[in-house]
Length: 271
Image (tube, rainbow, N blue to C red; front, side, top):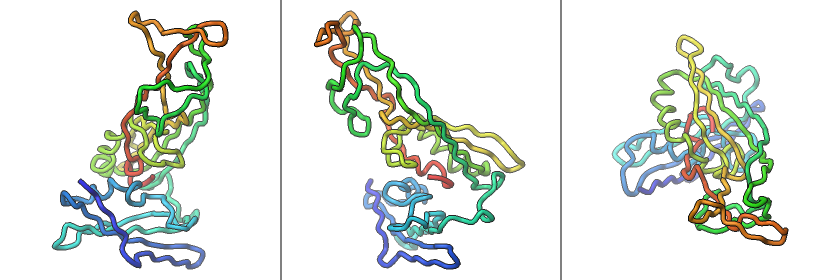
């Protein structure tokens, strides 16, 4: 399956009126192997092949993607996608907490101690080891006992107000697909592979209103775990180097979250 998205010639409109910037872009989308039968296939490519909610208009720092429309070209396997952009809304136009589409972000910067055998180790690309090799860096263990090193992490949640139909039909399948996976592209400024989607919680806040909170964690070390090589008895293989006492001979990186997910398509309200 090969998804293709082509921006149409002269598709970009950009205007400023009364201090408000508006813009638009149009794309033609199709698959050269299997015909696209539903808009969800196109939405799945937001944030990678296509723009996502919150992305800036090319070469603009004021107009962000706010809405889109998807229509099928009659008599073809092609679909047309139009993205609408606008500058920040005024306070009177911003959505309120009990209004569908309201989004709130909470961030908790923290530090925690992690058991480490090496400091300043070499990190694999995107935090996914592809070869079984020693991680390098400075040895900090003592006779195979790891040292607790401080790691800075960020816990953040995105809370949105939605209707139950949107959750069941659109968001829930994306939540299930993202749990325990790392971001496949830059997300909220975090590089690929540094954010893990931990899950979501849903609660009713009104007659037809629901509040959904998404939980994620950022780790600049890609959530990697340092693992020492052991002998046939299960003991850490030790060797004396230049400090006069034995230390773990070989350390590998293990990635507990090897799979990726496109976080930008989890909800139509945020990216």
